[in-house]
Image (cartoon, rainbow, N blue to C red):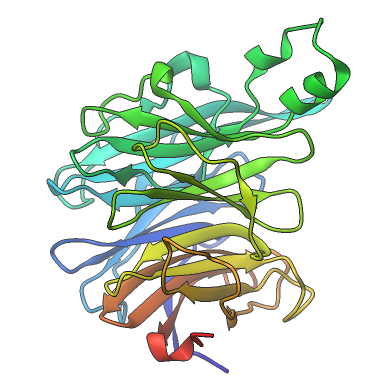
Length: 347
């Protein structure tokens, strides 16, 4: 099946777009952020923004939102209940050191009080204690106003115990998924609020995303270096988490959108090679996310024909009508694909 598509943005000549994220604002606009750089792993990454006032049919010219000294990567957007827009991203400094191709500078958040037109100075999530942390999922707002931001990485302070048993030392070298809490609308993110969502002995837990369910429960979907993504749940506002459980989602760089009917749309880069040898953009609807996320059929949304693709993000532009945004390296574009609820099998 071929889905209708639209060009959301074209990269500046000589650069490529990566890692788009989109949010539908309270005023009806769709705001989309993406990274622009000369390559997937280049030092000159910056965060760009475009917007649409007609449900994704046409888009504004790109403008710069963040352009720091190093590589600004993986932007994520959320609008809070008071109208504030938060943009999170992480920063790498690419270095040619033995065994260390880059330095992590941490995850940052900037704020906008005018719908994404201007932005505050960046705030470092977790302060200097958490400069090891990078991000892929957007912050979420809980009932009552607390915010949670999911991050992941390897905490170097956990590697300092030479008396630990070998298998424990090896486990501590693996990336783990963590949430950090803000009690002041995203102005600060203290390291002491961090709670571990998933860690283990056998593989990395990466790129966690959070979904807040209608009953207040929280679901973390986590990319791994195993075959499938894993899922963990919290019933106490993100303070503690269930042991991560394997799903049947061969998902990398995923995005979860809560739908108006109570379901969720999970869009992801498919590592199974069911549809092609590449990491195509694939999606499924999970109609009852408080129950299992397994067993629901997937559909292929987009294939650029290039191995470097996916990192999708979705918005619901009308009840039961979705816009999923990805990137196309061969054409140097950010691309949006339209689908509807009827396109997704229910069993």
